[in-house]
Image 1 (cartoon, rainbow, N blue to C red):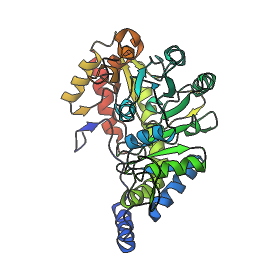
Image 2: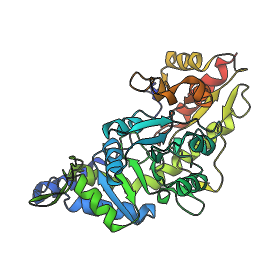
Image 3: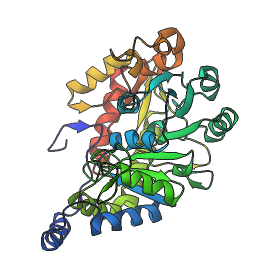
Image 4: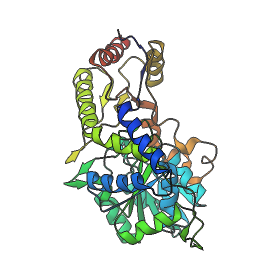
Length: 372
């Protein structure tokens, strides 16, 4: 047994301390701490190159990035989105005075179902905000066809999708904008942080204005922006993380493969299908606990906790069940049957680069033993 028996769903990946200290010394000597300093500019360029995107704007976190993306495209009215996500997805709409309209999800991918998107469109609809849940690609072609037909913008919440390639290119090039989270528990992190991927320099310039209170120059404020700037310390941290991210994803892939092989024959445990024509990042390891296992999902969750194995019910409860959303017509349970079923079954298992084979075996053994 490991000397640290606590197994969490994810743990942050940290760069070598001595390398980080060296970059902190550089920041100290430069005396530039924020406002688009040298490390900030270097990281934006390095990330764009690494991810295979044209333009990328760094922000202080993924939520502010979502808020700013909506402002960038001047979205108004109703936005169709998923109830099966982290609350920041819908919160960003409320912060912009927009009405979330929840549509049901596909039972296999856990992403928005294009047919349900189209059925939810009204004369007030101006945009779609899908989520690449667990880093699995949405049906980007079908969603774009709908957007083109009805004249809608598409902003992808791509918080889970760092480095994912789909149909030969970066998944982040889909839609009008894609938003990343660089929170400490993500595949790639800057402690706290986020980014907006955009298609052209003009759009990036508007994002850069908006994340700095709307300042276009020293005396001109062109919009009611916010303080969304990433500081130099976090940018330096991100530069170090970028050196290691490919190795981290490879390690996650090995861990995910072992889980899938070890749990494939467990009755009542369903594994999500691997997305086709995709290079995934294995940001999460979701399983579905279904009838036939012997315990409910919540029962297995509690059984694992008793053994100091801390899984997560991502995403439970549904956003549509939370007090600030449940009064919306689209939040009614009858409108979201698939999302409700999935939210009652999914359990995300520990997966992070430092997870040892011994620790992973503890998780596997606990799941196999709990069904008896």
